[in-house]
Length: 149
Image (tube, rainbow, N blue to C red; front, side, top):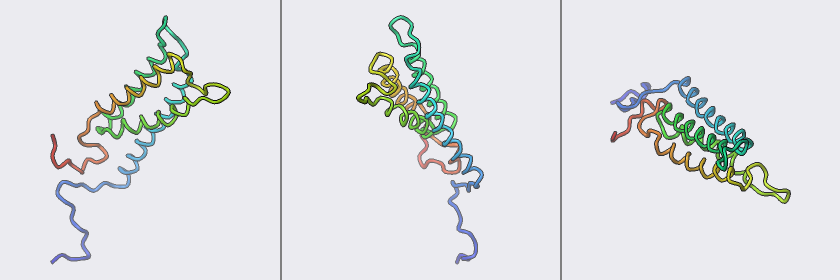
């Protein structure tokens, strides 16, 4: 018979995380979200800044940067969640920038640079999320997957 005054035992594949590790994890995801927001704001205003011939070079550069940041976040955190959080910040800002008012476009115009930035950015997000690792997380290091493949 178990003593009710003793703490319940954890399964053998689960570690206890302290408050410090949980706070660090929350801060990491919060910073990734804010990085996505900043990339959306700055990228939205500068995506049509320069062109090389008919190619909107700044929009292409922003798409590549967005892919690199989201994939890097997923790889550093060793979870798709890192890529998703950074992508969510970018989407939260970029989608309202596409709205058209009676005065005209807000930030992202209906031009080649705008299309490359938006559709290329969404494709980059999807690719980064799919390429990010899905096994294990430094935040959930004690929670091992049941069927690691």
